Each structure stands twice: as structure tokens, then as C-alpha cells.
Image (cartoon, rainbow, N blue to C red; front, top):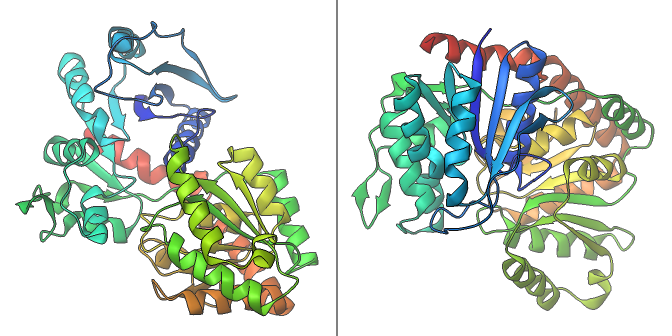
Length: 394
């Protein structure tokens, strides 16, 4: 039996986006497969902040078993080390570069290998933003790339971005050179459920009904400016259309409010009334939106994978997305979804309109997407790739 300790941030029910969902799904799948799983979750972690209360007692990993300890400040690091040692892991699996230095100390103390999953390629984000800004996340990730026993990525696009030697990390300083031999493309999985199968049946029976849905973090790289342009085009073209925006910027209400004001300043009042803003949603609440929507619209300029698109497809919800990063690997254009060029808000709007107005197109894509996910992307099909990486080191 493999004993693994995940070192991560914001493990559900403390939820901060795709990484939270991905790590929880992986941990639960590993428990079901018979692994001994521990999770050390740094919730709302601020590495430069001190003080705070002691860590709470370990709790179960959801309903699947395993144990999770949550820490949020430097005063709890001793408890975190004690928990890690008590788990007796054969391998450490890190999910955030800011946690790598801590994991390195554990690796030395426990004398076990350590791998890292690169959920977001920080150096590539800098390139997309046109900046060489130095951040704790970037520095931590670069340190992990230099010394991790294996580097796992969710898509070929993420691997290419990671291995691009032209990237710079800080004021022109070259990025860490990463040997391709240590990189593994593993992907993410999802869990099929009765609710997902019922949602698929609903979308096949009533294609194109309900509002359009966008879910995720606000930001330039996430394509929020293009989203607003596409929203205005669709709402102007279809007077009865509605849109639900589920997401925002967790732990940054001011930043989230700035994006909402940007929408309000750019859209006519009549169109503003047809847009609902839910704020950040927990996973079960987002599932309800997958069931009720007509289509998911994903405007990102780059995604390392595109987990929200995969979840929507599992639920039979047609997806119109940009071909940004891993999305182009996940979605087959005009088969399991509709893809538009990155930054092309006009094409994205046209695809959204098509999924609302062409019932046969929406039904065909819904059926093909749901079938493709169940054929290739459920955890029983994906987990062996992760376990193969573990076994290389054990």
C-alpha cells in the first residue's frame, strides 16, 4: 500500500478554485484505490505572517477516509511537521510552489521522494501578463522545478509552457532549466455521479434551455475582458437571453468589485438586469448551475487544463471555449464543444448564440461531450497515470 501525503492549499470544504477541486478529487480517488492518504492543507496561507492559534486536530478527507490537518499561520508549523511524520508517507506530493521549501525540509527529515504538480505555470502567466514581476509563488515554483523528483502537469500545453527556455522569471533572469525527463503529463479526472447523469439527461431532453453560464476566477488571463465583450454581443442579439456569472476573486473582494464595476460601466442598464452574479460558489452549488444552464462559456487566454469545462461536459452541458492551452486538448471543435481563437470575443459570442438557438447542435455536442468524459476522464481511467509516477520513485 502506498502512503502519500499531499501538501496543498485550501483543501475543500475550504475552496479557492480549480486547485482545491483537483486535489480533493485526486485524494478521494486515491483513498478509493486503497492508498493511505494524508492531506496537509495550508488554508489562506500567508507565509510572511506570524502568530495565530495552534492547529486544530486532524479531520477526515471528506467521506472517503484519510486525514487532513489545516494550518494557516507560522505558529502551526510544528504541528504540521508532527502530523506529516505521523502519517509515515512514502512520498510527498506538493501542489503549490509556496509550500515547496517546507516540503523540502520534510523530504530531508523523512528521507522520501517529493513530487510537485504544476497546476498553474507561473512563468507563463508572467509572459501573458507582460511582466517579470517576482512573487513568492513564482520563486517557490522555480525552486521546486530545480529539485523535485518529478514534475507533474495536467496537459501537453502546460508541459510546453514549462519547458519553454525563453521564459524569464525576474527582470530578465533566465528561468530554471527543467529536464524534460523529469516531467510527466497526467491530466485530471472527475467522478461520475447520479446527479451528473441526471443533468446529462436533462440537457439532452431540453437543449438550449436556461441561461448561459461562466464559472471561475476573474482576471485578464482568464479572459474576463473578452467575456464582457461577448456578453454584450449575445445579450444585444438575443433579447430573451440571460447570463449567470459564477465566480470572482476569492479573498479579494475589492478586486472582484472592480471587475463588476467595469461590467456595469460598459453595459446598458437593460442588459445588466439580465446578468446574475453569484459570487464564488462551492462545488455542490456549482453543480446546480451546470444542471440549470444552457451552455458554459470559457473565455480564458490560457488554461493549464480546464477543469471547469471537464465538469460541465460530464454533466452534459455544452461548452463554448477559447482554444487556450489545455482547453484545445480537452475539447474537439464541433464534436465535444465549440472552440474559438484566443481573444476572439466575436467568435465566442457567435458560438454562445449557436448553442442557445440551435437545439440539434446543442444536443449533439452535449451527448458527445458527456460520452467522451465517461470514456476517458473518470478517475478510474486517469488515476493509473498518477500512480505510475509514484511507482517510478518507490
